[in-house]
Length: 425
Image (cartoon, rainbow, N blue to C red; front, side):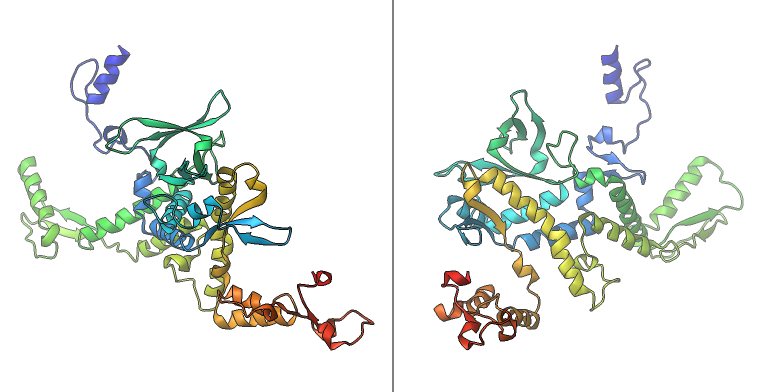
């Protein structure tokens, strides 16, 4: 009996009478929408959230920034010295070509967008001459399940791309998986933004929908039709209302209309300013940007920005917005992509120094301080500016004479330290 009830419910029939029941045409069950219905009456899904302008602006800003960062493998030579490990096979995968179809910049942009929106990023590890020969990007919506098996391994069930059908099951040592908090209860994956912030996204969708409908109606909020008597029949009333609404839609919205039967039109007096629509839309945009710690001026919210604070906010963008996901990427890469003893000898890094360089005057003043106080040489400064060194003489470090130890001889030669001398290491 339960089967017949379920079948009848699915086709909109009463199990007892077989008569069609009234159905909500916006029911997410009817259309197969996988999402949450917010208190604002909006169905929040992965795709509807991406339609919000501020969400796309945040993801574009993060993706554009991280796609410019060099992603490299470094070797630890000593406790104080490292070098780019260009001969390591993983160096080419990360820095140049992760797979046959994508450049490193494309791959990194997809990576940060998925990590910011889905709070998960997944790529399949393809072996080559090295155990890590390539990384094939897997869009997170294709991941159907992430679960720990009785053998202790974590397995990923991934939907194949058309025209192929079926699913692939990948073990955790076959994938590169980055996840960001908050995590699910089992700790195996991150919870997406459209799940943890569904009410805020639903509110934002409702505000956007109001604005679209407002302008679709010609900037009019509607009104009330006042009839002095009554219509002769419901059909006459319906015909009049249909003709009235048709005359105010589409290309007819600004044309004159004729009122019959002594009907009087009383428009609603509430407009966008009185409803505080603009202020509401702006505050919702700030609230959404804060989900990623994004500064307003980075997504064209400039009403709180000034010439004095934009430079400071740009620094905060690097420290508080870009750095956390970048560190998550670096540590996940060392866990999943460096194998065995390579984890002790090598490390993976995205260089964010370029984002903190500032203007040329500020940089040169900082270099001057470092040069005069002895922790930067001429070659150090040139390398930071991506320029060639000037030879061995550029490796000389200076020491201010007024900072010599008490009682030391005032020997001018003592004010120049060479890194080649072990005593000055």
